[in-house]
Length: 463
Ligand SMILES: C[S@@+](CC[C@H](N)C(=O)[O-])C[C@H]1O[C@@H](n2cnc3c(N)ncnc32)[C@H](O)[C@@H]1O
Image 1 (cartoon, rainbow, N blue to C red):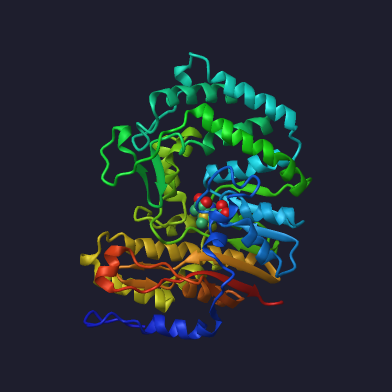
Image 2: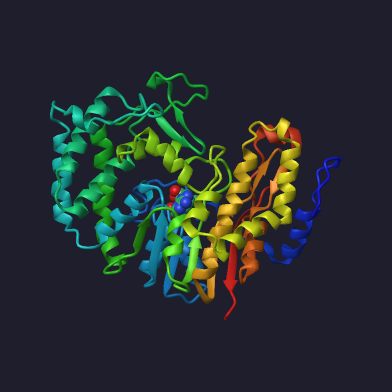
């Protein structure tokens, strides 16, 4: 399709005709509630409730997908805190997850540690010793939180000292399962004991931190570290027996790393089911919102920047990974085809064309490469999923559409088009009852339109 520079109205034909192609398969699914597709649904789930991984979906959602199909093996290439592989394991399905954020895999591994081989009594004694160690007056400078500029002043002075004592205690534990669980206990309460709150793209700050803040956040009185830890430890104690019943003997596999490098190492047709939710193309920056947790786990400022680049491109800071992908894969047909699909996807190119024409009006021009990079990388991921899925296998993907400068990017339709070019049939695009509205700024300029928040169900042909 050729777009001219003199279009008066931004072109929409390519997006409209893509919509028409999928229209009969798009339906509102009332059973898909916001709670089910978000972390909210895990608030009472044993294990998954410890680390509030707000980008997660619920175990109940994964169960509902897996209940519709026959599967022996499951993959989640963006497994976060491990909801999909863990839920699969509890249903007797071999689960594998790939996750680049160590926070997510720590949470998943802590649940596995609690479920397999951990003695309730050992955990009780170690955790009480940890709490007791916090009442000491002494702390070691070597164990203090190694702040980077974006975490500076996150904690009151006493909490800084208590964190140093906790770290020293946990570092000295020999048993790997106990150490994993107690590390998770410490990491999972960092936000609660800090002057920060995670808020999508950024951390928000309470002015008591002493930092200059534009959006005012007022947290209620912060708990002491010992208080918050005691609460988390109480939850872990309650959950251990339930986890040992749910996951007895089944150990899902969690791979640390990027799907853009790890998927290619997996053999063809290894998975009957994929249940996943990739990052959305919405500018959310996990390395900023999880800065406290990452720094606690040993990241310095440089490593954090590197991680930001390694994540699937979803922020205005991400640079193109085409060269990296060519280096990793070589000039193989999968990559060539993925790049070609991206460059020839008319609805995507139409959206990019309009954004380029409007570049001078964009609040940040880097949303253009963001969109381009996002789809290039997702084209590679979907190509890999097509290679890795068994004949007749299923993919369930949770994702949101996005809008920039009033231009809807139909993420669901573009990714489903990629999937159909790669041997899947898009069986359904189920949308939530109410899509997401515009930001208030966009509503003023472009009126209110709803964005689809959906689940796509793709099925691989039988062979
Ligand atoms: C929407 S969240 C999925 C959360 C997960 N469903 C759960 O229940 O916890 C997307 C995840 O993709 C991860 N991610 C981003 N880029 C990645 C990459 N290149 N490889 C693997 N994981 C990545 C993020 O760290 C995040 O945890």
